[in-house]
Length: 88
Image (cartoon, rainbow, N blue to C red; front, side, top):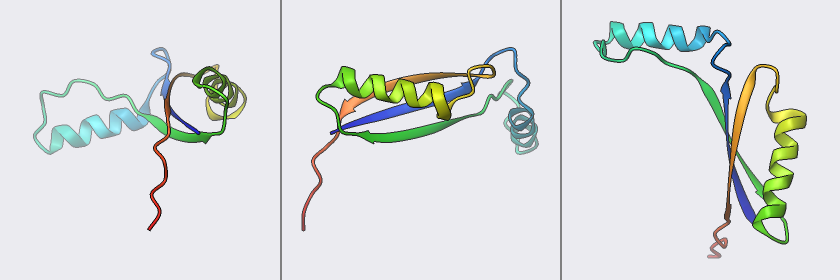
């Protein structure tokens, strides 16, 4: 079992109104040294695969087909072996 950690972010050319709102709110809270905020999403997938390369392939396909919009978003995938579940 593998865990895929996926970060999806807006492409630099895409406006990020949520990021601008967060930046403004942070400034109101006194964090004026923060100049820019860009938002995104984080997704974890548990994938049954023979090896890390197979798990990464599944995760990338899922991103390309559903989890990320290739016109507006970039994504990165990190795969690691999942920790064994602890039984009580």
